[in-house]
Length: 358
Image (tube, rainbow, N blue to C red; front, side, top):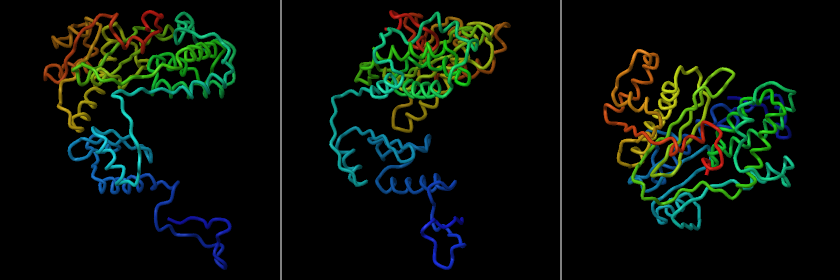
Protein backbone atom coordinates (compact mmCIF):
# COMPACT_ATOMS: atom_id res chain seq x y z
CA UNK A 1 0.00 0.00 0.00
CA UNK A 2 1.24 3.50 -0.87
CA UNK A 3 0.45 6.85 0.79
CA UNK A 4 1.27 10.47 0.13
CA UNK A 5 4.18 11.97 2.04
CA UNK A 6 3.19 13.95 5.13
CA UNK A 7 3.46 17.72 4.76
CA UNK A 8 6.73 18.95 6.23
CA UNK A 9 8.37 15.53 6.06
CA UNK A 10 8.90 15.25 2.30
CA UNK A 11 12.27 13.89 1.24
CA UNK A 12 14.35 16.54 -0.52
CA UNK A 13 14.37 16.03 -4.26
CA UNK A 14 11.60 13.42 -4.05
CA UNK A 15 8.67 15.62 -3.08
CA UNK A 16 6.39 14.02 -5.67
CA UNK A 17 7.19 10.49 -4.57
CA UNK A 18 4.93 8.39 -2.32
CA UNK A 19 5.71 6.21 0.67
CA UNK A 20 5.27 2.44 0.73
CA UNK A 21 3.88 1.18 4.05
CA UNK A 22 5.91 -1.52 5.78
CA UNK A 23 3.22 -2.11 8.43
CA UNK A 24 -0.43 -1.32 9.06
CA UNK A 25 -1.42 2.29 9.62
CA UNK A 26 -4.41 3.53 11.63
CA UNK A 27 -7.25 4.39 9.27
CA UNK A 28 -6.50 1.81 6.61
CA UNK A 29 -9.03 -0.95 6.01
CA UNK A 30 -6.49 -3.60 7.05
CA UNK A 31 -5.78 -1.93 10.41
CA UNK A 32 -8.58 -3.57 12.48
CA UNK A 33 -7.60 -7.08 11.38
CA UNK A 34 -3.88 -6.42 11.95
CA UNK A 35 -4.64 -5.07 15.42
CA UNK A 36 -6.72 -8.12 16.31
CA UNK A 37 -3.95 -10.47 15.17
CA UNK A 38 -1.36 -8.57 17.19
CA UNK A 39 -3.65 -8.40 20.24
CA UNK A 40 -4.46 -12.12 20.07
CA UNK A 41 -0.76 -13.00 19.86
CA UNK A 42 0.12 -10.78 22.82
CA UNK A 43 -2.73 -12.07 25.01
CA UNK A 44 -1.90 -15.69 24.16
CA UNK A 45 1.63 -15.07 25.42
CA UNK A 46 0.08 -13.80 28.67
CA UNK A 47 -1.73 -17.11 29.24
CA UNK A 48 -5.23 -16.58 27.82
CA UNK A 49 -6.83 -18.03 24.69
CA UNK A 50 -9.64 -16.83 22.44
CA UNK A 51 -13.05 -18.41 23.13
CA UNK A 52 -14.64 -20.49 20.39
CA UNK A 53 -17.98 -18.69 20.65
CA UNK A 54 -16.79 -15.06 20.62
CA UNK A 55 -13.67 -13.55 19.04
CA UNK A 56 -13.60 -10.74 21.62
CA UNK A 57 -13.60 -13.10 24.63
CA UNK A 58 -10.43 -14.58 26.16
CA UNK A 59 -10.12 -17.23 28.90
CA UNK A 60 -7.25 -18.82 30.81
CA UNK A 61 -6.79 -22.60 30.96
CA UNK A 62 -8.96 -23.24 34.05
CA UNK A 63 -11.58 -20.53 33.32
CA UNK A 64 -10.61 -18.56 36.46
CA UNK A 65 -9.94 -15.42 34.40
CA UNK A 66 -12.22 -13.85 31.78
CA UNK A 67 -11.19 -10.96 29.55
CA UNK A 68 -13.52 -9.18 27.11
CA UNK A 69 -11.91 -6.86 24.58
CA UNK A 70 -13.51 -4.14 22.44
CA UNK A 71 -10.83 -2.67 20.16
CA UNK A 72 -8.31 -1.44 22.77
CA UNK A 73 -10.68 -1.41 25.77
CA UNK A 74 -10.94 -4.44 28.05
CA UNK A 75 -13.14 -5.73 30.87
CA UNK A 76 -11.45 -8.21 33.23
CA UNK A 77 -13.08 -10.65 35.67
CA UNK A 78 -11.26 -13.13 37.90
CA UNK A 79 -12.12 -15.54 40.70
CA UNK A 80 -9.21 -14.36 42.86
CA UNK A 81 -7.21 -11.15 43.24
CA UNK A 82 -3.97 -13.05 42.73
CA UNK A 83 -5.09 -14.32 39.31
CA UNK A 84 -5.99 -10.81 38.16
CA UNK A 85 -2.80 -9.28 39.59
CA UNK A 86 -0.60 -11.87 37.89
CA UNK A 87 -2.26 -11.26 34.54
CA UNK A 88 -2.04 -7.47 34.84
CA UNK A 89 1.64 -7.71 35.73
CA UNK A 90 2.23 -9.74 32.59
CA UNK A 91 0.70 -6.81 30.65
CA UNK A 92 2.78 -4.26 32.55
CA UNK A 93 -0.06 -2.93 34.76
CA UNK A 94 -0.07 -2.32 38.51
CA UNK A 95 -3.47 -1.95 40.08
CA UNK A 96 -5.19 -2.10 43.48
CA UNK A 97 -8.50 -3.95 43.75
CA UNK A 98 -11.42 -3.58 46.21
CA UNK A 99 -14.39 -5.94 46.35
CA UNK A 100 -17.41 -6.08 48.67
CA UNK A 101 -19.15 -9.01 46.99
CA UNK A 102 -21.48 -7.00 44.75
CA UNK A 103 -21.33 -4.65 41.79
CA UNK A 104 -23.46 -1.58 41.06
CA UNK A 105 -23.54 0.05 37.63
CA UNK A 106 -24.79 3.59 37.07
CA UNK A 107 -24.21 6.64 34.88
CA UNK A 108 -25.10 9.65 37.09
CA UNK A 109 -22.71 12.04 35.32
CA UNK A 110 -24.33 11.37 31.96
CA UNK A 111 -27.77 12.00 33.45
CA UNK A 112 -26.54 15.25 35.03
CA UNK A 113 -25.14 16.39 31.68
CA UNK A 114 -28.40 15.57 29.90
CA UNK A 115 -30.45 17.48 32.46
CA UNK A 116 -28.06 20.45 32.35
CA UNK A 117 -27.94 20.58 28.55
CA UNK A 118 -31.75 20.67 28.35
CA UNK A 119 -32.05 23.23 31.17
CA UNK A 120 -34.11 20.82 33.30
CA UNK A 121 -32.29 21.31 36.62
CA UNK A 122 -35.17 23.18 38.25
CA UNK A 123 -37.99 21.09 36.81
CA UNK A 124 -40.19 18.85 38.94
CA UNK A 125 -39.27 15.16 39.12
CA UNK A 126 -41.47 12.45 37.58
CA UNK A 127 -42.22 9.02 39.06
CA UNK A 128 -42.39 7.04 35.79
CA UNK A 129 -40.38 7.12 32.52
CA UNK A 130 -43.39 8.17 30.44
CA UNK A 131 -46.97 9.35 30.50
CA UNK A 132 -48.88 6.28 29.34
CA UNK A 133 -51.72 8.27 27.77
CA UNK A 134 -49.34 10.54 25.88
CA UNK A 135 -47.29 7.57 24.58
CA UNK A 136 -50.40 6.03 23.07
CA UNK A 137 -51.22 9.29 21.26
CA UNK A 138 -47.75 9.95 19.84
CA UNK A 139 -47.56 9.94 16.03
CA UNK A 140 -46.04 11.96 13.18
CA UNK A 141 -48.78 14.60 13.25
CA UNK A 142 -47.90 18.09 14.42
CA UNK A 143 -45.34 20.81 13.76
CA UNK A 144 -41.80 19.45 13.46
CA UNK A 145 -38.96 20.64 15.68
CA UNK A 146 -35.17 20.80 15.26
CA UNK A 147 -33.79 17.35 14.48
CA UNK A 148 -30.25 17.61 15.87
CA UNK A 149 -31.05 18.27 19.58
CA UNK A 150 -33.68 15.53 19.48
CA UNK A 151 -31.31 12.99 17.95
CA UNK A 152 -28.54 13.92 20.40
CA UNK A 153 -30.89 13.36 23.33
CA UNK A 154 -32.07 10.02 21.90
CA UNK A 155 -28.46 8.90 21.41
CA UNK A 156 -27.53 9.59 25.04
CA UNK A 157 -30.76 8.05 26.36
CA UNK A 158 -30.21 4.94 24.21
CA UNK A 159 -26.75 4.53 25.75
CA UNK A 160 -28.28 4.71 29.23
CA UNK A 161 -31.03 2.24 28.33
CA UNK A 162 -28.59 -0.28 26.88
CA UNK A 163 -26.10 -0.21 29.74
CA UNK A 164 -27.60 0.63 33.13
CA UNK A 165 -31.29 1.60 32.89
CA UNK A 166 -33.40 -1.19 31.36
CA UNK A 167 -36.64 0.35 32.64
CA UNK A 168 -36.39 3.24 30.15
CA UNK A 169 -35.73 0.96 27.14
CA UNK A 170 -39.34 0.84 25.95
CA UNK A 171 -39.80 4.62 26.16
CA UNK A 172 -36.51 5.37 24.38
CA UNK A 173 -37.24 2.89 21.60
CA UNK A 174 -40.71 4.34 21.04
CA UNK A 175 -39.33 7.88 20.81
CA UNK A 176 -36.38 6.90 18.60
CA UNK A 177 -38.84 5.91 15.85
CA UNK A 178 -39.51 9.62 15.26
CA UNK A 179 -35.86 10.78 15.08
CA UNK A 180 -36.16 11.92 11.46
CA UNK A 181 -39.33 13.98 12.01
CA UNK A 182 -39.82 14.85 15.70
CA UNK A 183 -42.68 17.06 16.85
CA UNK A 184 -43.50 18.96 20.02
CA UNK A 185 -45.24 15.89 21.49
CA UNK A 186 -42.08 13.84 21.12
CA UNK A 187 -39.98 16.53 22.80
CA UNK A 188 -42.49 16.72 25.66
CA UNK A 189 -42.08 12.96 26.15
CA UNK A 190 -38.28 13.30 26.22
CA UNK A 191 -38.51 16.02 28.87
CA UNK A 192 -40.81 13.76 30.92
CA UNK A 193 -38.19 11.00 30.71
CA UNK A 194 -35.40 13.38 31.75
CA UNK A 195 -37.43 14.48 34.77
CA UNK A 196 -37.84 10.81 35.72
CA UNK A 197 -34.08 10.26 35.43
CA UNK A 198 -33.49 13.34 37.56
CA UNK A 199 -35.49 11.77 40.39
CA UNK A 200 -33.80 8.37 40.02
CA UNK A 201 -30.23 9.52 39.37
CA UNK A 202 -28.87 7.46 42.25
CA UNK A 203 -30.45 4.22 41.00
CA UNK A 204 -27.90 1.50 40.22
CA UNK A 205 -28.14 -1.75 38.32
CA UNK A 206 -27.07 -4.28 40.94
CA UNK A 207 -25.31 -7.61 40.54
CA UNK A 208 -25.37 -9.34 43.90
CA UNK A 209 -24.64 -12.68 45.48
CA UNK A 210 -27.89 -14.60 45.44
CA UNK A 211 -29.49 -17.90 46.42
CA UNK A 212 -31.05 -18.12 42.96
CA UNK A 213 -29.90 -21.46 41.50
CA UNK A 214 -31.07 -20.82 37.92
CA UNK A 215 -27.97 -20.35 35.80
CA UNK A 216 -29.70 -18.76 32.83
CA UNK A 217 -33.31 -17.56 32.63
CA UNK A 218 -35.31 -15.57 30.11
CA UNK A 219 -38.41 -13.48 30.82
CA UNK A 220 -40.44 -12.77 27.70
CA UNK A 221 -43.49 -10.62 26.99
CA UNK A 222 -45.41 -9.00 24.14
CA UNK A 223 -47.91 -6.14 24.03
CA UNK A 224 -50.43 -7.15 21.37
CA UNK A 225 -51.25 -4.57 18.65
CA UNK A 226 -49.49 -1.84 20.62
CA UNK A 227 -49.17 0.53 17.66
CA UNK A 228 -52.63 1.80 16.71
CA UNK A 229 -51.38 3.04 13.32
CA UNK A 230 -50.38 -0.38 11.97
CA UNK A 231 -51.54 -2.80 14.72
CA UNK A 232 -48.05 -4.23 15.21
CA UNK A 233 -47.05 -5.60 18.61
CA UNK A 234 -44.07 -4.85 20.86
CA UNK A 235 -41.67 -7.63 21.88
CA UNK A 236 -39.50 -7.56 24.96
CA UNK A 237 -37.29 -9.89 26.95
CA UNK A 238 -34.91 -9.83 29.89
CA UNK A 239 -32.25 -12.47 30.57
CA UNK A 240 -30.82 -13.13 34.02
CA UNK A 241 -27.69 -14.95 35.18
CA UNK A 242 -28.24 -16.42 38.66
CA UNK A 243 -31.02 -13.86 39.05
CA UNK A 244 -28.94 -10.86 37.92
CA UNK A 245 -29.86 -8.99 34.70
CA UNK A 246 -27.33 -9.36 31.88
CA UNK A 247 -29.36 -8.66 28.73
CA UNK A 248 -32.63 -6.95 27.81
CA UNK A 249 -34.33 -6.01 24.57
CA UNK A 250 -37.43 -4.20 23.32
CA UNK A 251 -38.55 -3.79 19.72
CA UNK A 252 -41.60 -3.35 17.55
CA UNK A 253 -42.42 -6.56 15.66
CA UNK A 254 -41.85 -6.51 11.90
CA UNK A 255 -45.16 -8.20 10.99
CA UNK A 256 -48.75 -7.97 12.22
CA UNK A 257 -49.56 -10.76 14.68
CA UNK A 258 -53.07 -12.19 14.31
CA UNK A 259 -53.46 -13.08 17.99
CA UNK A 260 -51.86 -12.56 21.38
CA UNK A 261 -50.48 -16.10 21.14
CA UNK A 262 -48.73 -15.30 17.87
CA UNK A 263 -47.32 -12.05 19.26
CA UNK A 264 -45.96 -13.95 22.27
CA UNK A 265 -44.40 -16.58 19.99
CA UNK A 266 -42.56 -13.87 18.05
CA UNK A 267 -41.09 -12.59 21.33
CA UNK A 268 -40.37 -16.08 22.61
CA UNK A 269 -38.49 -17.00 19.45
CA UNK A 270 -36.11 -14.04 19.70
CA UNK A 271 -35.47 -14.63 23.40
CA UNK A 272 -34.81 -18.35 22.91
CA UNK A 273 -32.24 -17.61 20.19
CA UNK A 274 -30.35 -15.36 22.62
CA UNK A 275 -30.67 -17.90 25.45
CA UNK A 276 -29.19 -20.66 23.27
CA UNK A 277 -26.22 -18.51 22.29
CA UNK A 278 -25.60 -17.46 25.90
CA UNK A 279 -25.83 -21.08 27.04
CA UNK A 280 -23.14 -21.98 24.52
CA UNK A 281 -21.04 -19.00 25.64
CA UNK A 282 -21.30 -20.01 29.31
CA UNK A 283 -20.25 -23.55 28.42
CA UNK A 284 -17.20 -22.05 26.74
CA UNK A 285 -16.47 -20.23 30.01
CA UNK A 286 -16.54 -23.45 32.03
CA UNK A 287 -20.11 -23.48 33.35
CA UNK A 288 -22.14 -26.67 33.26
CA UNK A 289 -24.54 -26.67 30.31
CA UNK A 290 -27.66 -26.40 32.48
CA UNK A 291 -31.02 -26.06 30.71
CA UNK A 292 -32.12 -22.43 30.33
CA UNK A 293 -35.54 -21.57 31.76
CA UNK A 294 -38.00 -19.38 29.85
CA UNK A 295 -40.66 -17.58 31.91
CA UNK A 296 -43.82 -16.62 30.06
CA UNK A 297 -47.21 -15.27 31.19
CA UNK A 298 -49.27 -16.42 28.18
CA UNK A 299 -51.04 -19.73 28.79
CA UNK A 300 -51.58 -20.32 25.05
CA UNK A 301 -47.90 -20.30 24.10
CA UNK A 302 -46.93 -22.32 27.18
CA UNK A 303 -49.48 -25.05 26.41
CA UNK A 304 -48.68 -25.22 22.69
CA UNK A 305 -44.92 -25.38 23.35
CA UNK A 306 -45.23 -28.25 25.80
CA UNK A 307 -47.79 -30.24 23.79
CA UNK A 308 -45.89 -29.62 20.54
CA UNK A 309 -49.11 -29.43 18.54
CA UNK A 310 -50.58 -26.65 16.43
CA UNK A 311 -54.25 -26.01 15.79
CA UNK A 312 -55.54 -24.93 12.39
CA UNK A 313 -55.71 -21.27 13.42
CA UNK A 314 -52.06 -21.21 14.59
CA UNK A 315 -50.33 -23.02 11.71
CA UNK A 316 -49.05 -19.76 10.22
CA UNK A 317 -46.52 -19.52 13.07
CA UNK A 318 -45.14 -22.98 12.37
CA UNK A 319 -41.45 -22.10 11.85
CA UNK A 320 -41.11 -20.21 15.13
CA UNK A 321 -43.22 -22.85 16.84
CA UNK A 322 -41.05 -25.74 15.63
CA UNK A 323 -37.83 -24.01 16.70
CA UNK A 324 -39.00 -23.50 20.28
CA UNK A 325 -40.80 -26.84 20.63
CA UNK A 326 -37.81 -28.76 19.27
CA UNK A 327 -35.68 -27.39 22.10
CA UNK A 328 -38.36 -28.30 24.66
CA UNK A 329 -38.68 -31.86 23.30
CA UNK A 330 -34.90 -32.30 23.36
CA UNK A 331 -34.91 -31.09 26.99
CA UNK A 332 -32.65 -28.18 26.07
CA UNK A 333 -35.18 -25.61 27.30
CA UNK A 334 -37.75 -25.42 30.10
CA UNK A 335 -40.83 -23.19 29.77
CA UNK A 336 -42.53 -22.02 32.95
CA UNK A 337 -45.72 -19.95 33.12
CA UNK A 338 -45.82 -17.11 35.65
CA UNK A 339 -48.52 -14.67 36.66
CA UNK A 340 -48.64 -11.43 34.67
CA UNK A 341 -48.02 -9.51 37.90
CA UNK A 342 -44.64 -11.29 38.22
CA UNK A 343 -43.51 -10.75 34.62
CA UNK A 344 -40.45 -8.50 34.82
CA UNK A 345 -40.33 -8.07 31.02
CA UNK A 346 -43.58 -6.03 31.19
CA UNK A 347 -41.50 -2.88 31.61
CA UNK A 348 -39.94 -3.54 28.18
CA UNK A 349 -43.21 -3.69 26.24
CA UNK A 350 -45.59 -1.07 27.63
CA UNK A 351 -45.90 2.01 29.88
CA UNK A 352 -46.32 1.00 33.54
CA UNK A 353 -47.85 2.81 36.47
CA UNK A 354 -45.79 3.64 39.54
CA UNK A 355 -46.87 0.60 41.58
CA UNK A 356 -46.10 -1.93 38.82
CA UNK A 357 -42.85 -0.15 37.93
CA UNK A 358 -41.62 -0.36 41.51
